[in-house]
View (cartoon, rainbow, N blue to C red):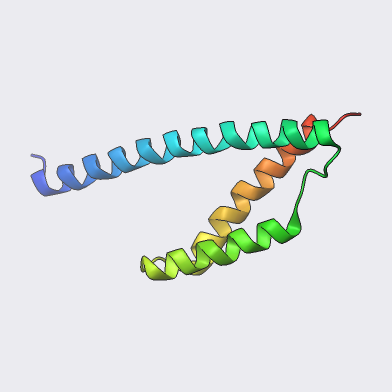
Amino acid sequence: MTDDQLTRYRQSIDNIDAALVCMLAERFKITQAVGAYKAAQGLPPADPGREEEQIARLRRLATGANLDPEFSEKFLRFIIDEVIRHHERLQPK
């Protein structure tokens, strides 16, 4: 026998996960364009100032949304590190 409430919770989680994947895919599509632009312009793949601004912004948003800001920073840092790795691959050899 299934628990209908648990099933509804899980369906909601599945929907949110699907939305997160789509949002991440869109974000990485844009960051790939940024990486290509940086490579063409001779700009470095990383921008530590921008990264720190984004982390501070996300921590504020997380706090306002009652989400642990430490978790949000770890999540964004993971994404930033992956973006930088992609940008580095686009740099001319």
